[in-house]
Length: 375
Image (tube, rainbow, N blue to C red; front, side):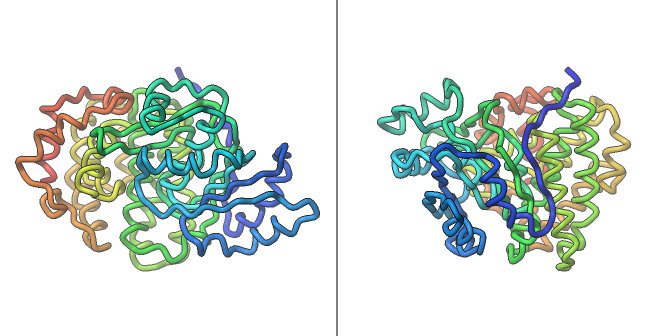
């Protein structure tokens, strides 16, 4: 069905985080209770929080620092326990995808009786959240996930060998403040892996079974911005940060309607079991999956042009170069994966809603071949 929907009030410009008090007032929260979930204590030192506390009608604000990557069921349950009695009207999630995943998940959990982690797992599995009890605002401090404009969250469950998704169509952010100034100081490896994750979102949205004409247009522009400024990102050019922030947001808008495909599906166990950063894991898979999908994708010449390559082999070389120059391995063996691990990883690489959204059919056998090609 060729339609596009995304209700997030999105502001993308340097310095736009300063508009947070204005946006919170427009939301008119009933009890003025705000939970600020931030990636570090440093993020909470921004002058905007002093403004919130000293407003004519001060907000009742609680702050929580969440520093972990790839949040687990256990971590989500702990934060739910710590904050459920505060019962915020609004969650302001400031950080990368992990912080926003926790923030948007909590919106779906408040008001539920969850005595233990298994009850949380059951709720996530059933998807019976009802209307989210809180609204949220996304403030990305990395340029990669696009999580500020999607309505789902990834929660990891390694003890159950599973990757879970908290999703509800009513859980889009009220607003996204995409401020490239907040990405300053990111380590180069994180900046590059985040950018490549955003590129993957756009590329996979372009060829997904659920794609539509608006998503495809957004995806192509995102790919052009990201792939056209990665050299600048590696050299420290300030304009590259703006391009990455905008490209990540556009890619997020694109895949907010389409979801991702085989690259993400295959990458999940690589991150869960070998702690390969998500952006690095998914980017290594782009070239072999592109080669597999090529004959099934309408508009492949336009996509290759946006990528700045003419074939999958050149894409592999280009992505490997970006990873290596940012201090990251570009092959599975260099991340500690053993050859004998590949069959099990291939079995785990079929994620419902991602693998079956890929234009070419994938099986454990095809996944194993793909993993061998990047080993």
